[in-house]
Image 1 (cartoon, rainbow, N blue to C red):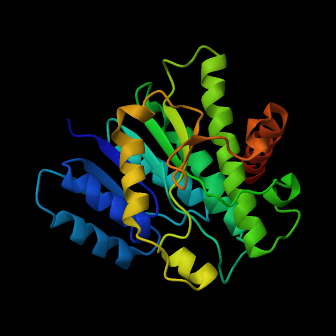
Image 2: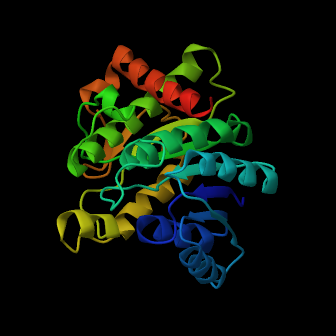
Length: 274
């Protein structure tokens, strides 16, 4: 059965490789990118693949939360349902680390944007959908003040904290559905470390190394999106370095700390909407 799958940050790297895999399998893939020319090249490449797969493209800068809202509206207007949302887009280093809203771009793109996009697309995802959030082996205790844009961090610290914050809200949201007896109304939400030091542009910029085969990351995202082993894994964390579901950073297992992170994200969003 053809599924409809949105992949953010899918104009290169793991995102594009995952899109190629899913289109080749016959699925409808919604590709997203910030750069319109790169997005058009990715759409053209994917459209030329053999098979019954279909491609739609969506442009949005996820560092600007008003564009995240606009992206969600475009997806809703052009699709009756969504089977899988893969929050793949991520930032490690940027020439402009502070956004126009005064927030750290790593927290915005890696944490807040996927939270907002997921919230807005819940009606399309329904009770059978899946949300796959790209986490990382790099996870560090989150400073809520940094998340809220009150404290500045180095690139590595901002990235590691943003990825733990993503992992924390993934588990928190998944468990909230279950605790409120909404399990049948909410999608499965899984955080995935696709593999350390794979050969993405981000890894090359951050560490100056070529990195490993990005198909390793694409394959685990395919499994997370489609395989039965992930259907009942809501709230869990999959570590592709070890090849199994594993415990994330201890803070992600702490309900009070996770609640604080979610509350901080919601407060940031509320303040921006004032």
